[in-house]
Length: 143
Figure: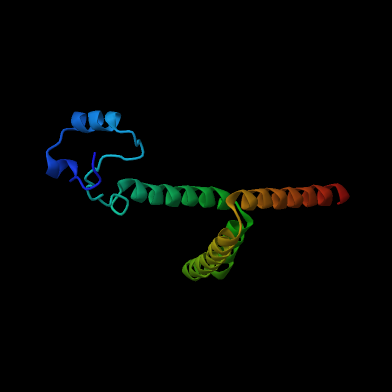
């Protein structure tokens, strides 16, 4: 095959003719010219991307919701609401506090995520939880 030959769609040469010509050629580094079709963007409108956002949201919601049920934060909110007789003011105050602490966690997590690998973050979190657990057990045995 000549280097100045036209692509397949223009030259009218069939694929088998090109393969035969390549077999006869002594220089195997030459390949037939192939017409390239433009690639469509699929990533931007992918339903999988939207689904993953819903999965992340749902997982986060369920995890935090279950972790907070019966937590000292919920119990203190319950007591403040009972004492103040202003449940909506207590709700707004506690919601603002939880949003603020969540914002700090997300900002710190994204900052750490840009500087450390996910495995390092996982291992560090595991070590920190282990240390906290050991400190709690030590406090129980001492007291």
